[in-house]
Image (cartoon, rainbow, N blue to C red; front, side, top):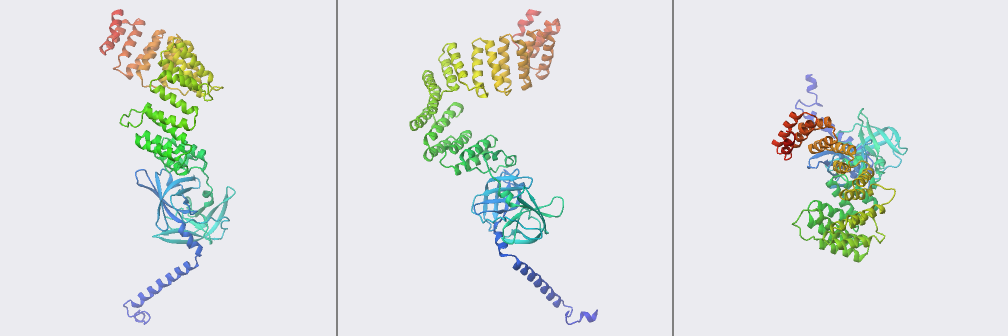
Length: 573
């Protein structure tokens, strides 16, 4: 051992030669790494410029998830894993040069293969797609970047399969480091082969053909895709305006103002001379009470859009609706006169009956019922003739206190003008005539129209309707139908003691006294301070011969403030 320690090749024990040997080993390792880098095709290295880091965020700005991906063109089109987008409010990417870009819309997604195709707002460095793929035994490189430098790890395709008769699915021999999921694999030509996906059951590394995601196409119905509905990042809009309008409408119906606002922005960017986008934005601003902003939006529409008559009409309609349905009194720039001015401007450019119809509605709202009636009836002699005109004319007659026969005749014309076979579009006219007949004392005719309305609505009616029809059926002495309807109203509004009181009152009237007792007991359990429950129970008990108990409940009703109780107590005492 001593001899070895004094060997001139090992030094004198100071460690100098050993340290030199370490330096030599490090040099050799670096040399080997340099050889590997040298062996890496130049096209592979260049492809690294197309890799990016994806970050998705929640609505509060906190980080939701991160991943990698690859740009597939120079116009911002990207492919990555879908999973980070689920539940995301917004997302950004950082490319290999450190440039940060927002994700503005999604073309499509697939959760089975965990892939998404989306767009970022900015110019990008895209990577070409491999059309033929790589055969088993072929070499591929997994691309990643860290600290602004591209990295490439060589792997071997151990298995290749085909799905959907077109796309490739690979199993790749490679020990991939962490945080490389969704990084692209490229071939020797630097063309993208697939996205890396670790196996959930084995240690294998998988890759799914990027062409699969690249082929995702958007349509007007994409907005209703269950996957795309799970994120606040909107679906891309189709290039066809009608399909884009469909997408915007479907997004509006999802009751997600944030996402809808983003879709409106996309529409305005795609179709800057179409009034639909400005109208949608102005409607959102009105809903938020931003009337001055809405005014500026529609003034911009009038300046930029073609045809301009549509912009004037939409502006008039927005003002009219605000005046009719908003309680705001602070924004005074909008008036019915302003709405009329815009409606006339639309008609001056293009004399459509639609624009005259809005003018007639404004005249009605200004209180000139005869003038509005004349305009509505004049429109019935044009190709704009429709049931709504006769309904509105009937309402004018009601405000003019015309005979009921005249009002009903106009409602008859409204129904006669409905398209056949009848659909739910005709339902409001039957309800209007039913209400008018009810008020005119023609109860059985009214019930027929109520029934027609119920049928046309296919059961999509609420408790208020069943109560309204029940009241008419009682007046028509159609008691069983009335009992059925009040029961339906109670089912739809189970916590309303007044509806139960109506049922109990009706049960007493038709001498179903045992049923009335059960109903009044339910009222008292539900609302022990509700005087009507005790009054009706007392009445039922007295009529059943339970005079003592009945009077006690009538006195309870009196104690709770019921004004009818005293007279009933005097009657039965």
